[in-house]
Image (cartoon, rainbow, N blue to C red; front, side, top):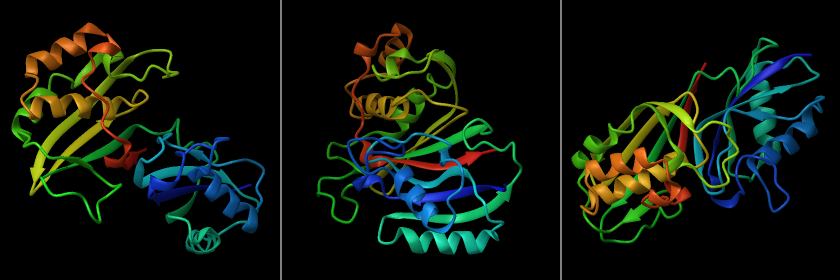
Length: 245
């Protein structure tokens, strides 16, 4: 029974997140419903990461076992046809080894957070970025962000409902740069805690606006106290942009 790796793009605005839930339609459910129409394999679809409601992806990865021996491009086209008009697309489909696991075989995950930093309201980026009207200092944000890079107890930046047994994670990259009127935050790690990226971005916004210094951010990290987190940036600006294997 062949196993397939799917690279997936989606606009998370209208979904309750990646994972199936009782309170609404998820990205996982959209894909699994399409798969049942073309190849009702024995199991469900496993994803590399469980993105929250409103979070987007340009390169989520999932794996699924199917009955038929599909050519990758044929599987992609058939599945995309079944999912229309949902805002979910299979970019690539390829057969992989039976021991490939989209979640546990991953060695690194990459996220982008987009802040639009201007006075004017969002139009075509509404629901796809965080609008911050006050001027942000991207250089100060990047400098402060480096105190978070490395292996730390990230309890301060961990959602209260996070189910991970251990709050220690190794953050390999946290870069902040300005691109026109946007602030881009790139984060890379093998694994993240629930809402860790959004929590870090929200606190970095405090640095960019002058409310916090880099020392304040470091003190918040070292406190290991969720109450010391600056804020949680909205889901609309977060994108899962890549998974390494």
